[in-house]
Image 1 (cartoon, helix red, strand yellow):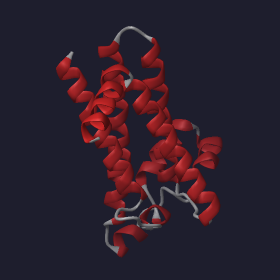
Image 2 (cartoon, helix red, strand yellow):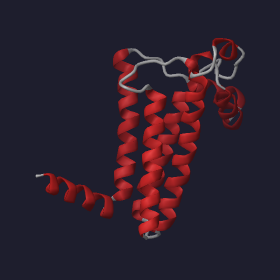
Image 3 (cartoon, one colour):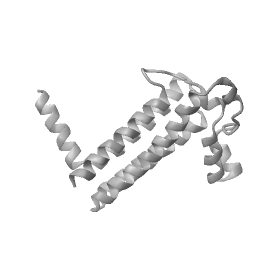
Image 4 (cartoon, helix red, strand yellow):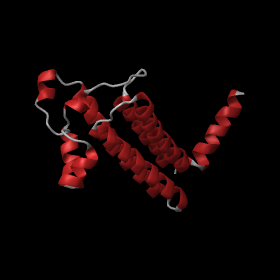
Length: 168
């Protein structure tokens, strides 16, 4: 039984790797939206930015499935996952700051989409990455919080891409 499961996972990993990453990212975004809606959680701007990075990973990986340059798509997935790890790493850093340091942050004063409307995409991303008190909230926990789970998934994507690049 275990060998059958292992063989099927290896088959998916070898033949449909990009789809695995793409649909995994879409599943993570969907789960976050569902948890927000049904548990009445309020996502901070860094959480929203993390969802956009997961969407970017999904787009890059699904497009990479349809092109024949596999090594190029693995590198793009690796780069977008590294960006996601940086974003979630920043949020984890903010969550572990002292209360005095958190109070001095002023980047996440309004929702991400509102910041994009007022300041443009570049400035909104810059302000969001600066962080704020809403980004320091731990929120719901299932072993880890959302930012830590995002960090784990981005690291898994990077690790799997590194294995794929090594094998090609």
